[in-house]
Image (tube, helix red, strand yellow):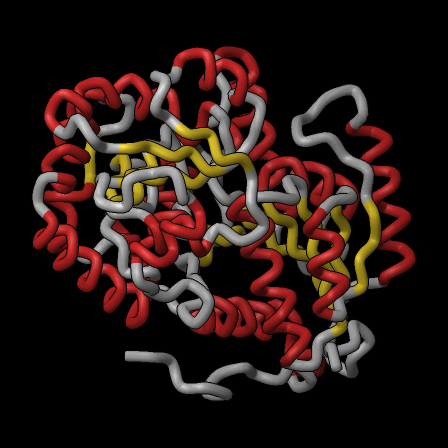
Length: 391
């Protein structure tokens, strides 16, 4: 039987837009742990697969109609969110990502303990006057967050250097190491790609097809990879606003697999997982890939170095927006199976010891205890040590 959202513990309201990708996985992981700890968990989000998954866990889900980006609809979105807050009467609000952070902080304005988690800064995603407005907002709105949670020290430094005077907590991302685990490559690949030579080196990129994730950089690098590894294959897993443009620019052998609710098999099928992002806070995809025992190549943006063991940095980090460096790193690893195996095992051990999701959810529980005060904190059951964390 699923946990009920109406537990005896404090009432937590998560706000999220977007409802896909890494943000959705973080919200789901937190909701699962908090329900198990006896909290009353409500999530306000737009309709979609996230809503269904949260209800299956036992969370109380309130539909919140909201676009992904700021615009003229914001006034109505804040008003609708205010009605949700009035009805739920939460003890604490946890707003995820820029849009929910914008609407949520406007609706609450510090009247309820509020956690804001940017999942990468809004002002990095845009340019020109829009970036200036986004930065001005983040500076002003910091006063309405009881705590700003960054997923890496690098993300916190980016905000601080930009003049955001937040009350900071750094809680690194974590992954479910039971769900994301190694499996035999050939067997998984045969089920996903029966028409592809199982011996061909396979590169997989998992992420929303958008400018942030940098799939265009990978496509620009791919011809150079093929010159050194002619039988290599590339699969892009995900969907998004750049789909048509990326597909038009892609060489013929590149496969656009689409979006999947469960991306684990794609990591397990890969010889190498690549994420050439332009900006991040700390991307989940490299952690998920390493948990599956797969080596990674990632761009050296916020959170990347903190998500890798130091021994992997020389082989796995490349400058962002540098197709030549990306092609060289990818080709070098595709041509060296023993190094790939070694790096994959090292990455798996690192994630088990440092980025297990139970560490993340317990750290968030500790933050909630700090913010809720002694009376409410006494009702917040710790999830620590319910199961041993793997070492």
